[in-house]
Length: 264
Image (spheres, rainbow, N blue to C red):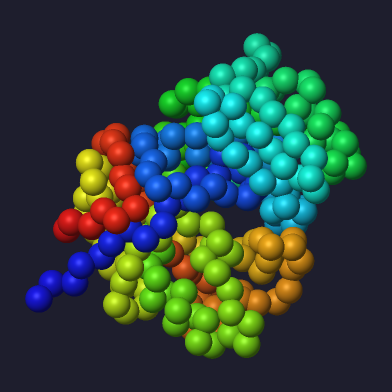
């Protein structure tokens, strides 16, 4: 009897490195789920802000409703439209990839600056092609959003359970910021996926996802400790990269839902 994999959870992260939003369904596009990492914060030198340097970003909680995004931080809330933006283009780098973005508005930038204690701007990527990412493994170029690399991250439930058996303090899947969590029967079996279909959408596995210190940031309080990266590095270290989950791309657009089966 073949193994049945079910979509257990779906997440989007509208603003890069801020908290995510759990969804019952999401619309998959070439650049990632609709509204996933289309926005990010940059500093005065136009460098992206991430939890690697600023763990407090995990304490900003977004919500999306009726084409508006509201951000809550320490019981204070700010709101802006998903469509608003200024006209002046800004050139930024997300790792090695050049990207063109625009500031959302000055009021929103000042709100974030006030809470973070230094000048920053909230910017958005406008359209497909404004950032391209080349896969050295496949020798292929992809249109991507403002995520670190690829548009989607998929993780199996047994991969987390296997890790938690080794940890003194158990953690949740939110540490790893997946877009798609699926039920599995064996740890890291998702590593061996090739092409597959969920709902209306065909996906392709590009590579295992190398993890950084961000997974040590507790999303409940923004406190960084040594785990789980310390334990993961003992059994998931390949060529000095600690692997957990897989980076995937969508081959077409469509809706996927919690409860959908993966079809190979």
